Image (tube, rainbow, N blue to C red; front, side, top):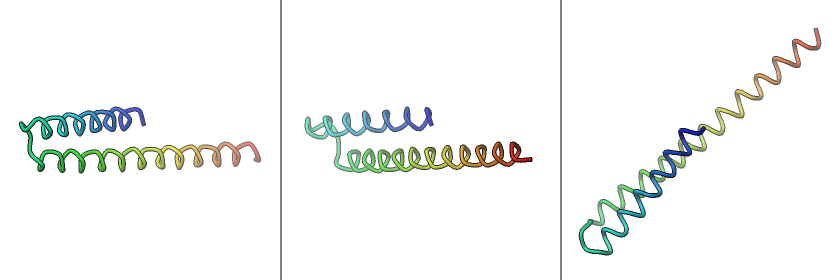
Length: 70
């Protein structure tokens, strides 16, 4: 999950830079849109990482509970 958090922060910063470049006239709208797409992808990756973590934790809890009840 930590890796996805880093990727999300990097995507946010890249979008911020793309917007600043566009506003300054040295970047393109395409660069901004690509950065927005990258941010959306990073957000999805973060959600997937959280879901995977929660599934793994639930599986571990079930395994420990099943072992304890034997």
